[in-house]
Length: 217
Image 1 (cartoon, one colour):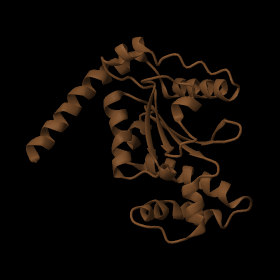
Image 2 (cartoon, one colour; image 1 turned 180 degrees about the horizontal axis):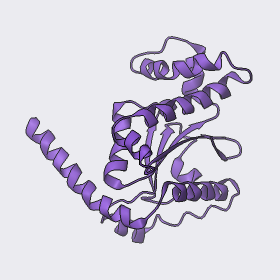
Image 3 (cartoon, rainbow, N blue to C red; image 1 turned 180 degrees about the vertical axis):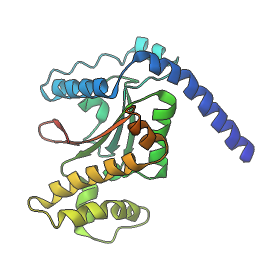
C-alpha cells in the first residue's frame, strides 16, 4: 500500500512539474483570469455565449497537459455548471464541486494542487441563490449519514444570517461564500504564502439562477 501511494505521489509531481512550467509561460495573472471570467459570464447571461474549445482539435491539445486559468470551488447543484456560466471550453477551468461548496481536506488539497503544480493564480468560491444545502441547514431537520457533515460545515453561516436583517437564505448563502473564502485565505502554507507574495488571489461570488449573472463579492 505504501509503495502504491509513493508511486502515486511521484506521478502527480512529475505531471505537475510538466504542466506548471507551461502554465507559467501563459502569464495569466489573477486579475487577468478574473477579467476573463467576468467577460465570459457577460456573454453567457446576454445570450452571446461562444464556447468553441470543445472539439477534437482542443482535445488533442489537452493530451499534452492542462493549463487552466482559474480554480472554481462551486456547489454541486446541477443548475450551476461553471464551465457554461463562464463560457469556457475544455481545459480552461479547474473545477472542484461539493454540495454547498463545502471545503474539506480533499477539496483543499485539490485547490493547493492546482496552485502548486498547475500554476493557477485565481481561486473563485462560487455560491448560488436558492442553495439547497443552505436551505436544508436552515431547516435544521435531521439528515442522514454523511450529509450531516455538510450541514455542520454550513451551520456557522446560517447562525450569522439569523442575526442579520434581510432575506435569511440570501444572507446565509453570502455568509457561506465569505466563510469559505476566509478559510482558504488562512490555509497554510501554499495558499496563505501565495497571497502574501501577491501570487494568488481568492475571491467570492454568487450565481443568480434566473438571470445567469455572477456577482463577485
